[in-house]
Amino acid sequence: MTALLADSAAPGPRPPLAAQWKKIDALLKKDQTATAAPLVESLYQQAKVENNAPAYVRALLYKIRLLTNKENDADEKAIALLEADVKTATFPARPILHSLLAGLYSNYYNQHRYQLYERTQGAVPTADPATPGAADGGTTLATWDAGRLGAAIVRHYQASVADEPQRQLKTTLADLGDLATGGDAEGRALRPTLYDLLTQRAIAGLQNQELYITRPEQQFQPTTPRLFGSAQEFVGLKMEARAADSLNGQWHALQLLQRLTAQRLIADNPAALAALADLDLQRLTYLHSTTQNTDLADQYEPALARMAEEYNALPIGAEFIAKQAEVKRPADPVAALALARQAEARFPKSRGAAQARAIRAEIERPEIAFSAADIAIS
Image (tube, rainbow, N blue to C red; front, top):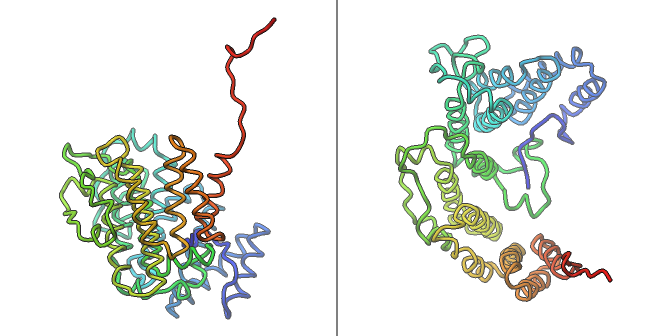
């Protein structure tokens, strides 16, 4: 799938900056960071003046790379750098920086998990965001506890998708230039806008239940079979925010999936239909992972069958069939094999067909199984 640029190795920057980036890359390859740093700073300042969002964000990422190469506390300084810039950044750089900040905070959380659990509750942010070494406006990360850091991650992911969503929906991958990298043609069609990319990053990041240290007794739990319904039915569900829900990863993920699904229903074109099908598949897969051993566990397979029929004219329809085969395989390998062959035949070059081939190969692979009791020594 397409992803936001996560480092400074993006290929093919467009002129007139291509030669300058190439020179910087050559210097960094030789570990000549002292020579590269002023060149990066020059491009950073130029991009800000020209309001060139792709070049501006890329220059920031290069600055973070330079910090990583020479600073012991690079992660803290990188966060402080982006926190300072996000306050003055303009669209579309601003929501991108919020998303990148959430990722940096998440990395810091993962790297310092055990130390965080041992810390007492960190001080609230100070009023002076210019405090040297500060992250989100005050005390340094070294004083933060897990609860405060988790709250910062949630806050920045939410800010990334709440920042002018309608403009994000009109910002295409081509508009993002080098910031949107990777993915084949099929994958890029399923994530066609900045809003898609940032929402998907937020969904993935907010699912981490470790972020929600304080967990009220009454929390959101998926209980209605309508969560497994059609896109229209899912969008129509009322998942109202309560105090407890703000501390629950499932609620955040489903809320974001609901918003993105609603946007795809509005767009009336073939590309939007494929993106809608992808969201439905993502929703069913996520619900399947979170509702096992609950009353909703038996909703997954029939929902896959319904949507396989609904999207049978699209290549992604084969993925629903492959998922069905995966579910059937343990208890009914014959039925699973038939479904796998159906998915392969439907769209032979699709991802679903590739998944189905792997399932079929597993089922058809001969195995030798025996126990010690089967062996007799005479």
